[in-house]
Length: 240
Image (cartoon, rainbow, N blue to C red; front, side, top):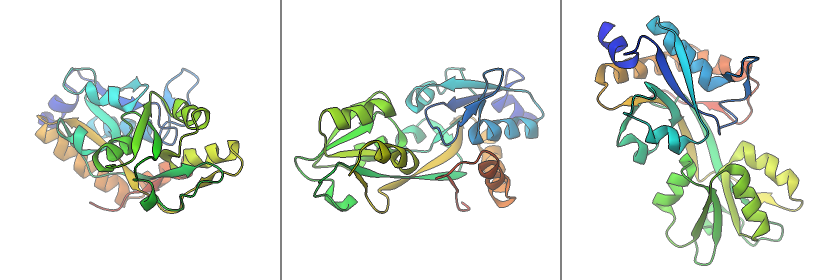
């Protein structure tokens, strides 16, 4: 265990990068201002298992968290596991999943996700979100218009009369209420795999995190966190 602690808590404290923009995983703040939710609680559980204190390191967007790997800013990062990020980050299997799908405006002729990737279709998306990285890899004919935040993506979608808004289903369920006549397409175009990562050179630490996540899923710990925080739209990921 000492080699694991040396890799994951080299300062004696587990510094956990937390993505504040995912409201399913960070659902509130404590009285002292600390992030609260499923993701912070997973980080606290890792620290408890290691027997070290935890320091939550918040980031407003997941891309900024991913960019900071290897800089000494954080020891573990809790974000969506995507191939681009995995080039520098060793991820566990997912501990939770969130469906990503599309919202279309009133009167749209688009009825399925398969009809989105066509010439002339303009998709509003949040830059460098896990689902946006999927769009970057897979959209070949439509045009993806990226914004800095989820709120900005919705405003751009409405104000510029774009054809499609990409997002996490739970957020789109809120957005559709603000746009009478809009529709959320059935199914999903991908599921964001929420995982825990560490720098690739931390081989022992990465192996520890993989085992921790599988145990947390199998024991019901992840399910209990989702229930405790009353999160809708987040489900426990299947075993690796």
